[in-house]
Every structure is written in structure tokens, then in C-alpha cells.
Length: 302
Length: 274
Image 1: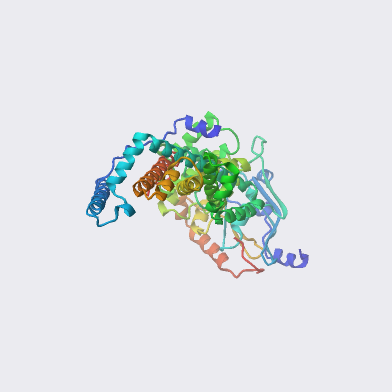
Image 2 (image 1 turned 120 degrees about the vertical axis):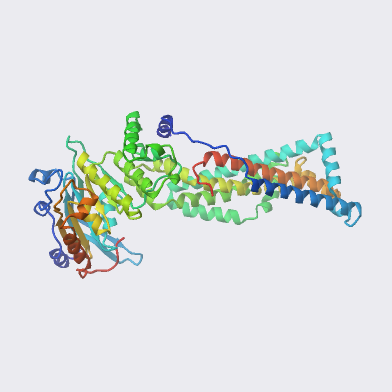
């Protein structure tokens, strides 16, 4: 750690505390309130992490990164390839242990501990399991599957139009159907926070819009908080309450943009894209992504 | 396992369609039979007309006579059963030990590399060269043939299963870890099922190695078995009995491969057909 240099880096980054997040859109189904700050679903505090290459060179990916995600909030993270988005998700989900700082998952409304579910880029369905068995995998790895879990899984599969293929194996499904099974598997563990790492990038446009609606409905129905990593600026604006631009080396939050859209009807993937402010947000985020990389160091994060 | 059963219990059943052979596959099979009959007829004709030396090449009729004589005396069935038993026992021991050890090494990544190096070393030894040692240690009975067949299959099974466990998709491992799965759970629910196609393809390859082990063991020292019969007949220039032994060994290998394929189709039924 070199404090002097670290300070310069941080001066170029936004430090996202409670005040920053309070710029949040009032379009949320659960509008931002001071009380919500205390009930943050995720709090990332002073997070620092570095990778050491084979030749012993340390590449700092994050240096004292701070942000939080509120109850029922959808936050998108955009950034160039190698900005550290996936590494950030790995740190939040516990796949990597941060070298410094902390990741705190907020409790549920009833005071019990919250839970993170991570949906990776690929659907990662197990080919030897049926759709229903795949959907129940997260529960099965955690505890014994109960009859009520099976009923819940069947209900959720039915909601996503998959009840007809519950007993089929994944190779018989289309890409969109597979991704919905993966989403079902993610949601059945009853998470308070869902991490989505470009989950729709390989899908056709129509399927993508449907799944975007499904994710937004999650927040509306259950108050689930969602953090989405995407390369698709339109997707980020259409779905999110906040879009965060991650960049630089070590990576920091360069911009935190609350999304406020004027909508004639209920917000969904299509109506969001028709909002008059949509293009302005797009231009702003695009400009942020094209801006010269600040505080450039060595190496590239995955 | 109980969890998986619980899920099965709610009605996840595999639907199996009755598959009839296609016209193309029936024509192909018919052509193979025709070619074989033609070849045998030509061979017999050549032996009758003495275009071929019957002492050196035998003949289909001679093979038939040898089979008839072996069946009436009862030696053909008993020799076949002895070789089958030695091959199956050796295949089971070698494959189980090799596969089990190879998969369990997933728990010990630090040891895995060293153990895999040893198994590659063991695999590079010409196992047949160990034959005399095995006969001295285990005698000239079925035991030595079983161990020779087991040694012939062990290393291949171990190398293959170690690789199968190591080559698991990292994203799948991350998925399991993101669900906070314990290592024993990852092994049971991910490593083991993922390795099944590898295990079966290795088992098919190992049928041949196990047969070589048991038959060569019978060549070296034995009182019974197809290898023994072939060896004795060869030294007596009884080429028809040699051919008979070779044909039965080929049929045995084909039958065992077919049985393994059937079991594989049942257990790895989720694998998409090509």
C-alpha cells in the first residue's frame, strides 16, 4: 500500500455513501428513504483486492472501494472489459476473499440473515438432472429438499412457462428456457440480493426483453435487491434504478447515475426504452465509458 | 443422494421411446453378414482346392469341427467361462480401484499430480512383462490371471478418472461454491456424475486390456482357459482350434462392449444422442 498514490486515485473516484445513493430514482417500487440506508441489502466497505501474477507483480484491482445497494434496488454496473466487474461479483459472493475491507449482507425484514444468489454468465444447468432437479439444486446443496420446496419450484417453473418441460433434460431446451431455469434455481434459494453477471448476453432480443421483465418483477413482488453486470447500456438503463460506471485501475466507481424515467405506463423493458430521457442516459453512460482511463496501472482484471 | 431421490419421488421420470432399427442400419448389417459369408465360402474353397495350405491357415469347416468337438467334450464352454471370469474379475478390480482412486484424488490436489505421475509410469510399463512375476506371486490358477488383467486396466482407469475430475468446468465449480456447497457435496453432485461418461468410455477400452491380461496370463502358465487352449493348439499346429479361440475371444470382447454400452445408455441416459 502506498498511501500517497492511493489518495490521488481516490480523489478521481466517487465515494458512494448514503448521500450518493439517496439520489436514487423515485420510480422504485420501494422508494429510497433514510431508513433504507440502515437496511442496505449489501454494503461494500473499503474493499481492496490485488492479483499477483506468476512473475510476482501485484496488480491492484480495487483499492478501498465503497458502495451499498438498498432494499429492493436494481443497480447495474457497466464498465470496459477487464474493469473488474466479474472480480467484484466473485468478491461479493464469497468466491474470492477480499484482501482488505468487508462485504456485508443486510438482514431480511424479519431480522434473519440475508442471502446472496449469484447467476453467472452461462446457464450452467447440469445435463444429468431434469429441469425440476436443476431448479432445486441450490436448495439441495444447502439442506434437504422438502415437499414444499418442490411445490414452490413447480410454481415458479409454471410462472416462467416451464411447467411442460419440468421433467425434460436441459439439452431439450432453447437458450431462453435454459436461462429461465437458471433464474428459477437462483431465486428458489430465497435470496435477498441477486447478482446477475451478463445473464442475457447470449439471448435473442425478444427473449432478453422477457427476462428483463422477469427480473424487474422480482423486485416488485418480493423486494429483492439486484445487482446486474452488463455490457449493454440499454439493458442497464431499462432495468435499473442506478447505473454505476466502473473504471480505472485500480477500479473505482467513476459515475453513479440515478435513472429517472418519465413513463406513461408501468415500467417494463419496453416502456423504459421508450422514455424521453432514455437517449440522454445512454449518451451520458457511453461518454463515461469512452473517457480516458484514469489512474492506469498494470495488468487487466478479469 | 436422499435429496435426489426425494426429487425423483415427485414424478421426475425418464420417458423412453421404443427404437426400431432404421432401414439403413438393417441394410448395413445385412451387407456385413453377406461379406462374412462370402469370405468364409472363399476361404473354404481355397482350402478345398489347396490354394491355401490347410495346415498353416486352417479352414471354416475345420473350425466348425473343432467347435463341435470342444462342445461335445465340454472343454469349450468351461474354457470360455474361465477366461470370462478372469477377465471380468480383473476388469472390475482394476477399473474400480483405478477409477475410485483417481476420483478421490480430487480431494487432494497436492497429491494428485504425484499420483498421476506414478500412474503414467505404471501405464508405460509393458504389463505383459510382469506376467512371470505375477505367476510366481499368485500361482498358476485364476488368481494370477485376474491380477494381470487388473494391473492392465488399473492405470488407464486412474489416469482417465483423475483427468475427468480435474477437467470439471470451473464455472460449474463456482456455481456450487456460490451455493456454499461442501466439498463432499460437490464430489457427489458434480464430480461423480460429470465423470460418468469418462468412466464408461474407459471401461470400454479396458475390456480389451483385461482380455489381453487374462489370455497372456493363460499363455504363460495355466491348466485351463481359452488362452491355454490357443497356446497348446498353436504349439501342435492345430490352427483350427487357434482360430476358434480367437473367434470366441473376439465375440467375448464384442459382447462385453455391448453390455457396457447398454449399462451406459441406462445410467448416462441424459447424454444427448449424436
